[in-house]
Image (tube, rainbow, N blue to C red; front, top):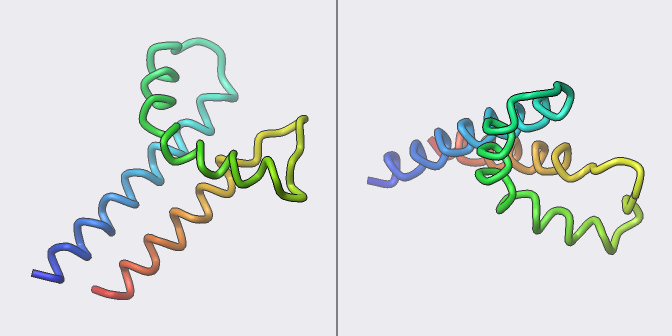
Length: 86
């Protein structure tokens, strides 16, 4: 039972990682507004807390939004954590 739960979380974080990567790559290209809005809808619940924490940190940079990068690192950490529990 626990193995199934850990596997589910591991796969969830892989999918979240792919969605975040597509979100970051879509910001480089013009067009595809429907895809960008869908990716934004899926990934904003992850990025909002990261942006809140960054607002009060030394990484508060109005020129660049670092929250996708930091979110990506957090997702990688969680994926590795659940991967080691398998």
